[in-house]
Image 1 (cartoon, rainbow, N blue to C red):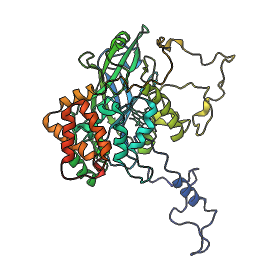
Image 2: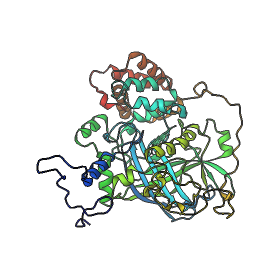
Image 3: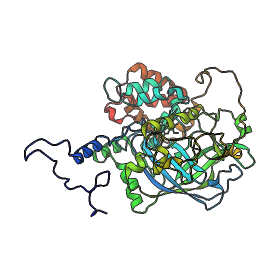
Image 4: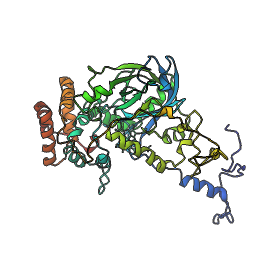
Length: 488
Ligand code: HEM
C-alpha cells in the first residue's frame, strides 16, 4: 500500500508533494497550484463538531453471544437462539470534558452499544451508572451547562454545578454514586454498563414487559482515588483509551455479562415507585438479574475518526421486540440524538459504514440530501401510495397499544417524590474506608463554593442521613487542598 503513487482526491498522480509552485525561486505561489489549494482546503475542514456531551471517547468492535433463552419476553431476533452471535460496536466516553479531555476524570462514563441485528440496528446508549442526575428532558441543557465551561470565564465552575444540584434533589442518587469510589473508573474494561432507562420488550404473543439492561464487567471493578487520578493525568491523559486499545491488541478481550430485569405491565402498575423514573433503580430482590448473554470486544478500529468519531448512537434505534417506555427523559432523548447527528454528521449519517445496518435498507421515501453516496435507490418510487405496491409496510411489527390517560399539565415531581431513600440505601453500603474517601471527594468538589449553596446541599444530605451531612461538614472543615481540577 505504501509504495503506491500519491494522488489527488480525484485520483491523479502528484508530481511534487514537497514544494509549492512559485513564480521564480523566491517569488509568490500561484493560484493554479491546485494541489496546494486542495491540501490546505481539506485540512481546513478536517474537524467536525464534537459531540455536545460525551465528546471524549474510545470504541471497539465485538460480538454479543446469547447464552440463555428469553423468548418468553421478547421476539427480538437477536435473542432468538442460544449461541447466536451478533456483531456490535461499543463506544465508551466521559461526559463533560471536550474531545481532548483527560480520561481519568471524576465523571460518569458513557457505555453505548450498536448491535447490527438482522432486523436493523439496535442501540443501547447507556452509562456506567443505573440512574441519572435529572428525570425531565426540559432540564438537560441547564444541567449540562453547569457541567461545561462558565460563559464568562470559560472555566469549569463548581459553584454552578452545586447551585444546580442543591436545587435538584432528584440528582442526589447519581451525585452519591459520582462522589463514591466508582466515580473514577480505572479504565473502561473494569466498570459495569447500564441501559439506565426502563425499556420494553414485546413477545411473539404481542405481550409487553418492561425491562432494564445491565452489563456486568467480567474483569471486575477497579477505580482510582482523586489523588491517584490527579497524578495519572499528569503523566497520561489517554489512560482509558490506551488500556482498551492495548488490551484488545494483546487479544485480552474484555467481556461483560448481559443481564436484564423484567417487570410485567401489571407489576409496573403496582410498583411502589414510578418504575419509569431514571433517578431510581428497581429492587434486584424483587426483580432479580436474568442472564441473557455475553458481550466481548475483540477488534480495534483501523481508523479512529472513521469509526469512533463518526459513530452515531440513538435510543430511538430499536428493532421489533424492543420498545420504549413512558420514561420522560427517554422520550426527550428519542428526539435529541438523531437531531444532533443530523447537525454533527449530516442527514445521511446512516450511510457511514460504522452506522450502516448490515441488513438491506429500503427507505425510498428518504431521498437525496448532502453526501448521499449509496446510489439513492435508483429509480425506485419515492412516494406512497404508488401504483407498484412497492415497499409495503409490515403490520406485524406494530406494538400493542399502550394505555395512557390523564389531564395535560406540567406536574412537579419534586413535590411528592422520595429522592432520599435510594441514596440512603447506597450510602449504607459503603464501608468506613469508602465513607471517608466519599466525604473527602465531596469536600474537595465543594471547595470554593459559596456557603449558601453548601448549606442548601448539606440540608439535602441531612435528609438522606445525618451522618452523611456530618461527614461532609467534617471534610469541609479539614485543612488543605483543593483545586477545581478535581471537580466532576
Ligand atoms: C451523547 C443528549 C441523557 C448517555 C449525547 C449527545 C446528545 C445527548 C445530544 C451527543 C450525541 C451525538 O453527538 O452523537 C441527551 C439528552 C438527554 C441525555 C437530551 C436527556 C434528556 C442521557 C442519559 C444517558 C446518556 C440518561 C445514559 C443513560 C449518552 C451517551 C452518549 C450521549 C453514552 C455518547 C454516545 C456516543 O458514544 O456516541 N447525549 N442525553 N444521555 N449520551 Fe445523552
